[in-house]
Length: 359
Image (cartoon, rainbow, N blue to C red; front, side, top):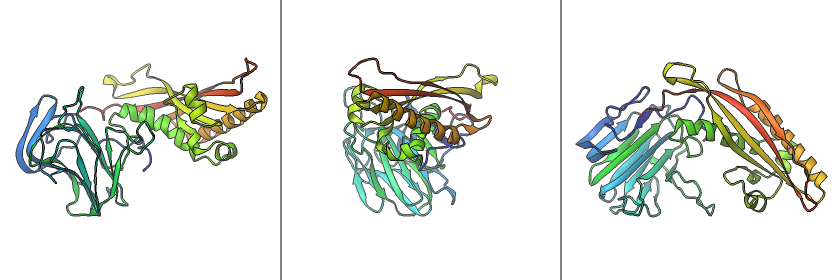
């Protein structure tokens, strides 16, 4: 799946309120399909016997639901907590009868790692689960919005969906007692945490701007970017320490960072739309015993980065524009210096709709 574009949003957003009465504009209500046991408690909608449904159209083939939940008492084994059914494939998240794991069920079944579903750990928080179903039947379950752990090991589980049985999107439980803190659903795509965040602000700033630039540079066909800088060396710069930039990623490398975001003026009453400006820093790192060669190589890579982004980003006039740039070129100041880091800063302006955020 690609990163969510500016027209895609969470079509239903619950913050612990009654699913039949969501708060805010452009927020679709859920339909109760079974049960009567549901009520508001502090910060959550507590369900003892309810299943809620969103209708899925025939052309809605890629689906995502994100929920924050905790168990008051554990649902029975194989109780369906979440289900996505696009009319061709179906995938479900089911309880396993205990307090630590859930199961992802499609054509096969995979069980998660241990979760703190009843919030007994120290400083515990509700479990955040993201279930996606793509048109080809691929289904993923992400836990706590983590794609890879600290050891770069895949943190989510996957199955292929089973045959469709009842088209729609579902959440709830008919046994046990579960607190549902948040439920976010979209029919616009099967989005991973790096493709669409629960917060529209994060989606616009980190994902549509920073991570999107990483993906564009990885796919570039320009000479230095495709032959000298490996795809693994074009990354979002969560860690800009010297250890990360030199030892963990072999130069030449490109680190992209959303460094500054501001909105000096809200252009409409109540802030329904805003102009937001994004400063994106791009660090091009090269290494060489001859510093001149490292400097020139860094310039060549930076030039291709600029050309690629100038021709492929910020092109929607009045909506998403590239408004300026600044380049800072490194120089050798120490006899033993062998690393060159050039920094390119691009400034983008986006017009953001603010009325899709309320829950």
